[in-house]
Image (cartoon, rainbow, N blue to C red; front, top):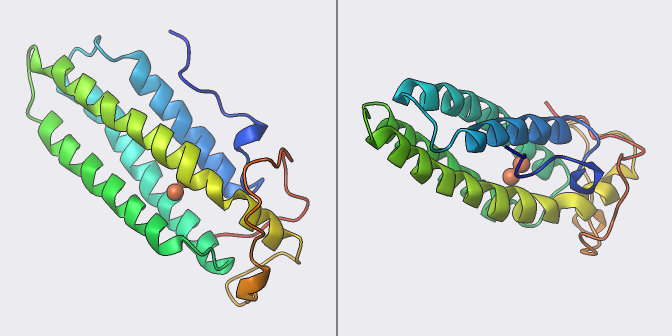
Length: 174
Ligand SMILES: [Fe+2]
Ligand SMILES: [Fe+2]
């Protein structure tokens, strides 16, 4: 089955750890979606969801740290979205865990709906809104948690048209 999405430079945000996280998350999402309707046990679904859960938690922490460093203006909304995604994933895992028989693939479809939502409304929309702010901050010297950026310098709101695959200077996160 063809991947639903492949990571390429148009999805680049920081040329570093955030991009690397997104590549891994997209790989897990593709792996999950390629098996929808063909899962043979709840354990098979859980293996992939455990991996996604672990990667997502680490990634959300790194992304929130980056947003704090660059004083991203929508960071509170973004943080709330991360919490909502984590909570929903954990609830779905609790639902999947005891499932058997025909319900395994019913749950597989339910999880797939959630994963589509995550991909299309969070990664491809909310995360991509950060790009111009990260690019703007990256024109300064590499940042660490002791650096401070003036709020007015942290982005031009001129989003989504930048096609630079890699930032010239990287922001160091976690
Ligand atoms: Fe995010
Ligand atoms: Fe993200």
